[in-house]
Length: 195
Image (cartoon, rainbow, N blue to C red; front, side, top):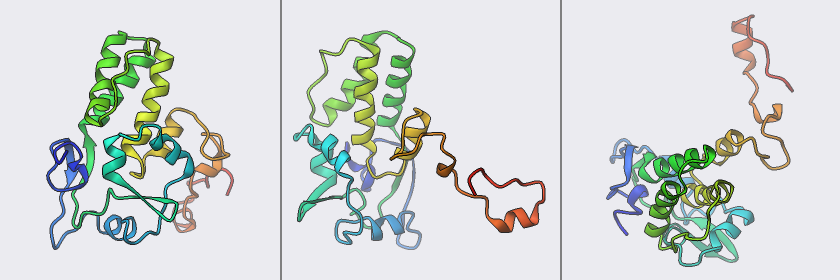
């Protein structure tokens, strides 16, 4: 599994592009100090825990998470001086599978991409799903499992026009305000709605 799940270690064969870390230039310094299991500052949302627990044999669960005192913690950033993956092969497979499902493309092509990810995670292949809608639901869960705690859930939900917490994807509260300093410097700037 070193080559499969090394995206957060230094023996990675799945990254297409990554930020390298050295002793003097640690790309993931905050990640490897704040988000480690040892620091225990951040825990996984119970909804995500439910998604992860759906398949107990999922290798991603076994390699990336641990439970302490009833709380789930990420182990993705436990490797000191870890290289940070920016683009991964699994992401490209999920993008292609989602695109094909959205376009009602050939089901066998969608199934092949999705099953590549599932097999490497020790999950059973999906032979039952035969509709684009069914695959989109499965792909969404695979996104959650594959990229949990990597900072892209917010953007994924916005892209799909889904709620983020209690807010609709287009809610002005999901857009940060323009700093007042920038508005003072440029009178053409208009503050974002809601501020």
